[in-house]
View (cartoon, rainbow, N blue to C red):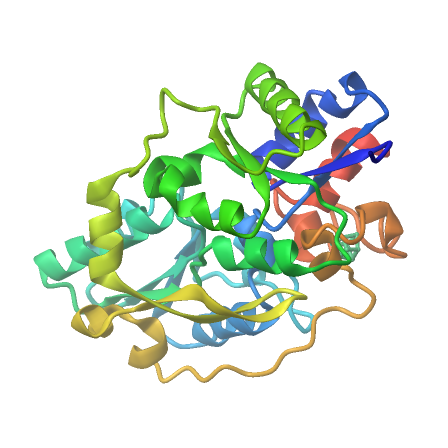
Length: 333
Ligand code: SF4
């Protein structure tokens, strides 16, 4: 049996809470917890950020987005440099803005995994109901399972099990993670408070030492086997699953979402004829390897020097849920 087990948590909220509450320091040396590809801002490709900047350059366009997106550098520019970029806390405010600004084109930046996607679907449906013709979404939403499959199939990875995101599972249901069992992997679906996370780590550690495969639901009050049927239905109606480019990782099959034909008039890429450009990630940034658990932030030569939260080089240092940001704030300083 191995002397040390390695557990990957797959959610930005877990990344932050494990760091913020010092949970690693409570674990025995034999348990190593690393972070995975669960921060949506961190996995957004440079090409997608460039597309948002192309839109920001257009006359009469107002970009609406969540806060972290505006600080991701791309070819020396950031969305925060633009006066026509507005940070919203509620995506529905984009609809209000479109209603109140008929002479402007409102473009919402759709980012996130299964937890956030139903919200994006619902605002697109709402825009259609209202007959808005000045509202679109630049869809960069992703599906988390192909990244986990990539990690599971990589024989060089030394990951013994996953702490799985409870909020994703609340939407998808536990059945979504059946592929993990099929690939002889293991995971525990976890809530987000420190006690819940520690309990999930203990359950997963026991599965590892007993060599048990499968997925255990440790967030039973919230997560059901089939998830939220209504949310899944609207996501299926509004989006098609397509291949998608992940920051530092590359294109993963069936890992992204595109607005379906029925709602294509709300697709910003179609409305403004945006073509993807091949934009290089920042030189020496290891975000891709950090997201796959192959490196930790301190392995990066830029960490804490050229790359700090006040002046980030890569998105893992930008996002409030990014691994590099969590390390910098709570672990290595
Ligand atoms: S420290 Fe900065 S440059 Fe290095 S991997 Fe993290 S985000 Fe990228």
